[in-house]
Amino acid sequence: MALKINIPVIDEAISEGFKLGASTLVISKPFTEATPLAYQLAYNWMEDGNPVVYLTNNKRPDIILEDSLRYGWDFSRFRKEGKLKFVDAYTGFMGIKSEEDYFVNNPHDLSEVDQVLVRAIDDAGNRALIIIDSLSTMIDYFSDRILEKIEEWNRLAILKDLHVLYLFVEWDFDEGLKREIREKVDNVMRLSPVEKGIILSDLLIVEKVNGKMIKPLTVPIRYVKPGGMRIYVPKILVTGPYHAGKTTVVHALSTRAVSVQRRGTTIALDFGHLDYKGFHADLFGTIGQERFDPILEQLGGET
Image (cartoon, rainbow, N blue to C red; front, side, top):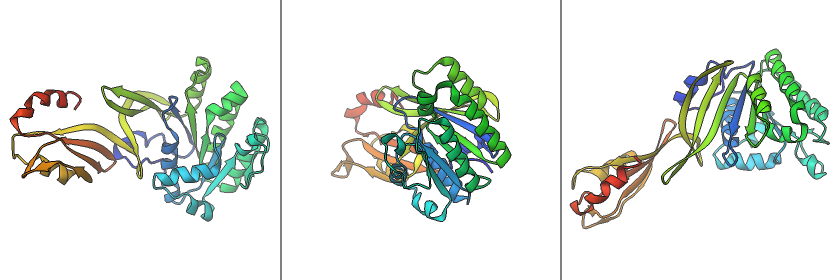
């Protein structure tokens, strides 16, 4: 039993380490979202009939339910079935009572956070996915004391056949502390923004699998709503001579496409989206008339 993103090329690469009795660290840069990946992993896990315990200390549980629904994942039905349990370590910061069964009254008390989490894990049973959202918030409050708890939770994963997923935003923490956290987990994935010309996307980088550093697997990704994480191909250029069928190809490949035509010929770039087997691509069809040839090199520069 392994965690699945449902993108075959990534799932094959991580399958050896992303299993029960293990731990995974997802590192993201500030303003790069890791929570949709956690939602995607959690949804696939629950779809396979397994429980999830989701500890949140940076947002209310109802926000998680609303946010995940935007990506097409209805967590509420799993909650009703008892497969999804929230540990609310956020509402206590505001000094109000939570409606969750597992509520941390004083989120500044690491011992109480641990006790409530362990109680939820015990109630969930074996084969549960434990999501810690977020580890960076815990470091803000508890500093390096959290390292001992990471070791305890990882041991618990082995004893109770669990998988622990830590979400970590890489703010300006001590480098030694960040290194120790990486060493204490079995798997490490990193999300990093990339900008090339006018193209903006994120990279998913798998750095460590099954306790061993590997040659990094780097994949350009984008989140789509609905659908979640997809391998992102930012620009596929369909080109050819006048009346070669470029518009027809773009429309045939795309789930949705836009063209501008006049008197049976295309007079502007065709634009379409392809969503297939975990891949998300933007398609551009060039204009076949000779007077547009000077811009072809510019159009193809970032293909």
